[in-house]
Image (tube, rainbow, N blue to C red; front, side, top):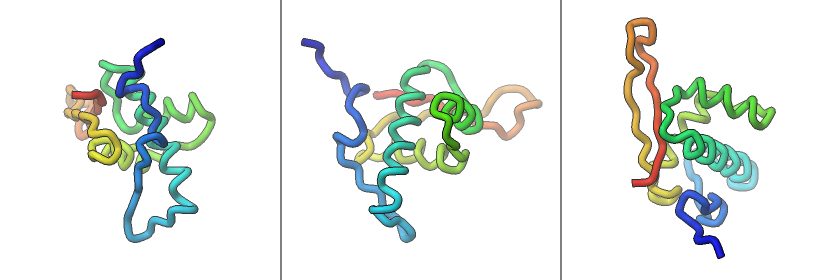
Length: 111
């Protein structure tokens, strides 16, 4: 029997509850849950590689054939930090080099 780690627990098993003024559970929960799962799985899978929100968005589109807007990827990275979504560590840093001015990179892992 294989022991399950915290990385292996699907988001839907943690029963996350999204919220917000414009949130409608019936319309938004399946989409946001899928986005959260896919961002998390991708970032954990590439650890310890640092990626920008844009790079994550492009990689997810290539993997799943669906659009992952950068704003959504950014929001899901913020969600991953929340206790109700797993309390992941989401580190960020500025990408080095003047040609990358203003680009931030992210790394997701369990503490």
